[in-house]
Image (cartoon, rainbow, N blue to C red):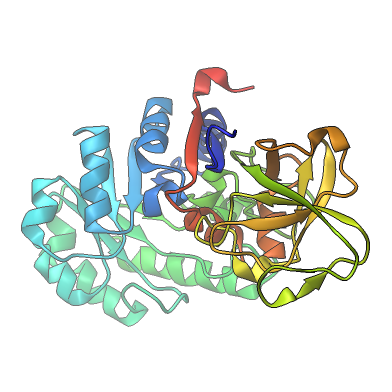
Length: 362
């Protein structure tokens, strides 16, 4: 009997801290750590503590609730910014959180506070003040009287180095820096991919990497991922069967065996984070041999064609590697018709997290 049918996500905390240290050394004013969405699905508590202990002093989360949780985890010293903007002033004060101010109304609502962050929209057209609104925000008491101030923006196409939108956004942000220069402030412009757009971008100020910290390739057009891999995903075989040629497999019988086939079922489905859209499109590894997933991915399981894998590994409980080594996060995402961000953040709580501490970094 298999002791557990639970899939396992192995998370190398040492690799996360090495990734942060690399990016922190590139940007002119170092790098914060974006740890929203439960550290991109990898666990805010474990990742946050590892990054804090590695030297990170500034963190960004998406929501007030995430900020509360991170404050409880990290203690009183680290600075924590909340990207979604200002809601309850008292709640932000209580937990020593700093909202990223995205509208003029929010700028006014944060008047008299110690720290201020203003978000300038330079071309993303998502959150942030319009360039035409920045002069009013920069002349406000909120901006002028705060003890510390940060002006930020967000790149929309940084993973495409040749996209002219990057230079256009850089020019708009530099113009915004001039508008806000009636006081000293920290500029923050580059995200994960922005760290690889050249010195003009690195010179701006504080970086805000996210997916790159967690091993995601910030430059998909590059031949090699500049970041250390962080995650490995595996799931145990929970049933084996042999079927003859002509046998349909899975919902709708969309895959049909073309030969006598050894099938293996693993405990990993779309409720765990393997997208149904990836059906018949992803290879996994058993006993050093690549095996195709066949048929439609189910909620709790996926079926594999193990026929060509070494027979000695055709046994219940044997772990099947889904992500790891050359089976990269990006390869899995491509087979799923999505991006590495979505794969990481979709891995459900049913998947066991197993952490390798920085001391165990290989």
